[in-house]
Amino acid sequence: MESYQMHKKDDLCRREKKKEGAAMYREHTKTIKIGNQVIGGGHPVLIQSMTNTKTEDVAATVAQILTLEKAGCQIIRCAVPTMEAARALGEIKKQIHIPLVADIHFDYKMAIAAIENGADKIRINPGNIGAKERVQAVVDKAKEYKIRINPGNIGSRERIQAVVDVAKERQIPIRVGVNSGSLEKELVEKYHGVTAEGLVESALDKVKIIEDMGYDQLVISIKSSDVLMCAKAHELIAQKTDYPLHVGITEAGTLFSGNIKSAVGLGIILYQGIGDTIRVSLTGDPSEEVKSAKRILKTLGLRNGGIEVVSCPTCGRTQIDLIGLANKVEDMVQDIPLDIKVAVMGCVVNGPGEAKEADIGIAGGKGVGLLIKKGEIIKKVPEDQLLETLRDELLHWNA
Image (cartoon, rainbow, N blue to C red; front, side, top):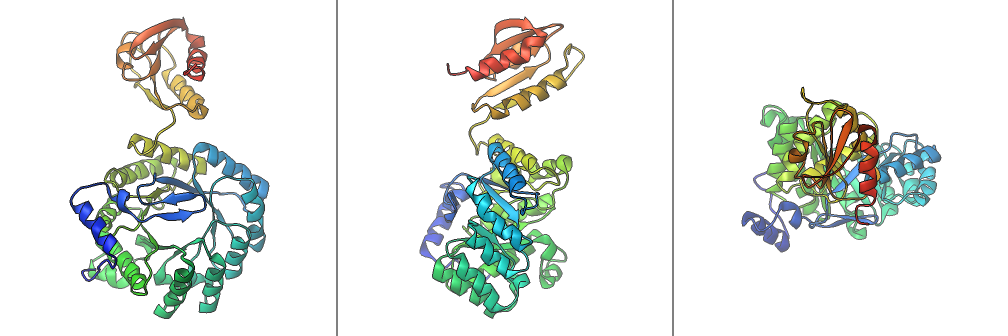
């Protein structure tokens, strides 16, 4: 996209600041409001996830969302495949505390019903919804809500113009989405395959189409299941635009492989100051997505709060069930609202020294355990009381 140019003077100012190294990229992105949350403009990176319940089952869906809220989810998306599901959103909204996104695929009437029932944002593919008047009917109802579109799926320029005109009239942010699985044939041929350069050109081409129509309230999402391609694409696009970016490694995989791919990919991207919202996409319990996202953000210094557990690897000196103890400690601290580091060590000989960088720690020996603070032994307790002793200390940390 050699011909791509930003239209607004403040955009150019932000770009110059970025070139000068004045601040990280996300410090200069545009701000977008979704329900009671704000992204971009230096606001904290937010964690998104999606329910896997039947949305029509209000009780089950609410229960899962509340669990995800407790885990740290900040924006939740629900599938809306039926009119019953759309109507259920009203009851769900009454019982949750984070923005709710309705995921619509085909029927524009469901999109309208979802908005009427309180959705904070709708995710639609206008190309699936169909005719221009149907797209406009959805947008007319959307008013203050954010819409995700793939302009390439909408079809003709006239259809895109119809969506943009209504979005502009009502100041509705539009999310432009591109992924490696739907890259245009001509770009695949131009770059001899699916590449980061092709993804960026595709996204910026669609952005420019909308900008040329006089609208710039946009969010961009470019995703790939190829970690290095995804990272490179974000590096490239961050140099060309200051629109907020939703970041994720799409179709990352199962809990094991998906976490590894997401941690590596998101780590590379976020560490460079790129990204305003994230989702760790896993084939598994959505709570695991949120837990992983929180840990990634905390490890990168982008999120405060929550106890960090560090533990040593097992060795021949270990005389306790260190693996079991470390897992119990990690589970135990999930609901304790402290921002500290806890060490779990398997050796009373080296444990105190190795745990000195932690705020508090425990080390086990044969039938005995040590409670350690900043490398100093505070007390010695029987091994079977070690976990409870640690929990009591944490619960009375500021007492």
